[in-house]
Amino acid sequence: MKLSLILSCAIVMFSATLVQADSLQDEIDAATKKFCGGIKVTAPTTNKVFSDPKKVKVTVTRVPNSLAKVINGVDIYSINSKGKPTYLGTPWKGTYKLTKSATLTVNVNKVKGLKFPSQFMFRVWVHNTSGPDCTLMSKVFKVKSGSHSNAAEEDEQINALDANIDRGCFGVDITNPATGDHKSSGALDSVQIQRDSSSPVEVFNALTLFKVDLSTREPVQVADAWAGNETVHSMFNIKSTLPTVDAADAAAFAYYYKLSTTTQHEESCDFYSHPFYLDA
Image 1: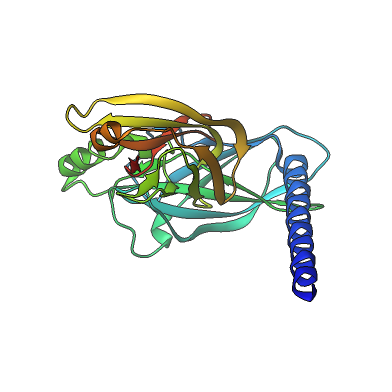
Image 2: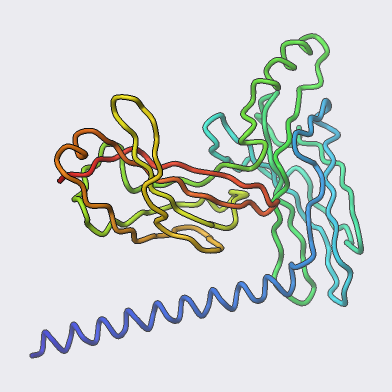
């Protein structure tokens, strides 16, 4: 009886904690919308290449209102060939009043150890005098070293960089299912998704289940596992009922999920899970 009471109390407390967490996130989202709505990083634009790392320009615009705003920092991230963003430092610090538009010239060489040519992304800090600060991510841009001695080689390297990264399609990983997992036919599956805080991806739109014929390698859509319009900050979990298969199909097919998303710059991006198998 005591154990049952303790468990009941624990469940109530856990549920209350979840409700409080959801309520707090709702308050944060509302404040962000109020104080950060109407602010955008409009440059660099997609596929922009800067030849001089000392003269990289970033433009921030806003819809004017009664709230005073000041730009006080620009962080820089590098994005490697696998789409992993890495914070490198803050090449610009200052106080720049943001009325309608502001263009800053950033010397990214102030951050030590940068490698060129490469793909980068800015995070701009906008301070509100009467509310929370806003952080805005730029589109991905490319920077060359500025050296004329190897310009042709750098141009080749720039052209070989991943176009999906240019579009902001990175920083999201479907961590479950894992590669080669075996799941029970007809069972309830838990699809776990992790989003990096610096990812341009902002909204999750749909999760679709596919199967692949192991002999022909042809993919076929199986089911719409989930649809929505969910703004995701870090972790996201989707429950999906797996199809029922017989022994022949279990031996003939592998399965995977496709996650459809939208970035804050309104680019559509798809991410794919590792392949897994269903046991009859």
